[in-house]
Image (tube, rainbow, N blue to C red; front, top):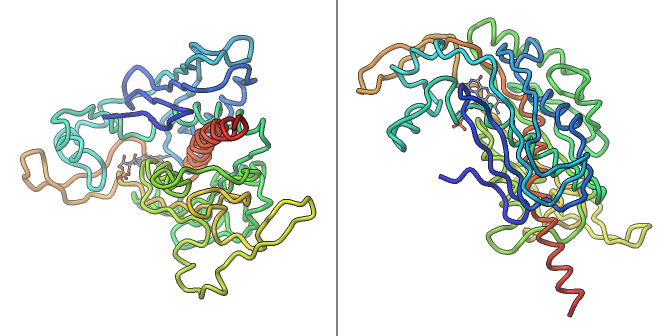
Length: 364
Ligand SMILES: Cc1cc2nc3c(=O)[nH]c(=O)nc-3n(C[C@H](O)[C@H](O)[C@H](O)COP(=O)(O)O)c2cc1C
């Protein structure tokens, strides 16, 4: 029943969609780290509902309050608690969901597991839970920035329409240039039209997000079970609606020969060892190799749709359910900052774990 992620740098999130509020406790963050509340709020604004016509129209300001662990803009080294209150919760929209299970949502499985659930808004299965991750991810990103590590994610594909961008140079400004968060302006309008068409049809669409972490030093990742790629997959798969994760070349690599796929080593101008290509996605043997960490994450089409669909009620009796309330016709635009946050959280954790190894190595 754990809601905690990480070992050296840990977050615990709390809250349900229609409860009093949501938030996060960040533990293990070093003291004296500069933390800007405005930066945290800006990231929450990128995740917030109601930010454009492409996302759910639930109107939440998602204003963050820091309750502990920070004084005068600096971390104290003590647990950092952040709270985001729910304001626009409409429980009546979920009367049908109390009766019948939404296809491909978490209603049935929460009942099967706990025998009780917070019905309105999907309770803890709601993507509102991820507000705490984004707030905690900002602390992680502040820590990573002190070591020159930066993370960017963007919408890569919507329902078969694929972006073509150079992932090594994409910036967050490029990504935020349109409501969809796709930096390829040649395809972004077509993607937006596809999401709008799905919304008008009472349906939904899925797609993929790419993420790149630049400036990651070689050496992060713990053999054998906490390999960096294993933890990237776990971090991303923990995001609601994620159905797949690729690291580096991913499934496309299976179509290549070894001689085509291998990343050839060379000595860089600065003397460091690098690779000429990055099909490994910056990870070999579960340990970062100093190249950018790259991953691609698949999101399914939003489960709750307005179109009526067959389902059953709690007694297994067949019934028809048409979604009501406010829902994302495509989760991708709001998922971009969540993907960045999860990448930051796992890298901050592995960075602190590697710091300990380096300290011990240095003392021997
Ligand atoms: C940013 C974001 C927004 C989401 N919005 C909705 C939504 O409006 N309606 C919905 O049914 N699911 C939404 N989801 C997905 C559900 O939370 C998710 O499908 C559900 O918890 C079941 O989990 P699973 O899809 O991982 O199996 C969203 C997910 C994300 C990442």
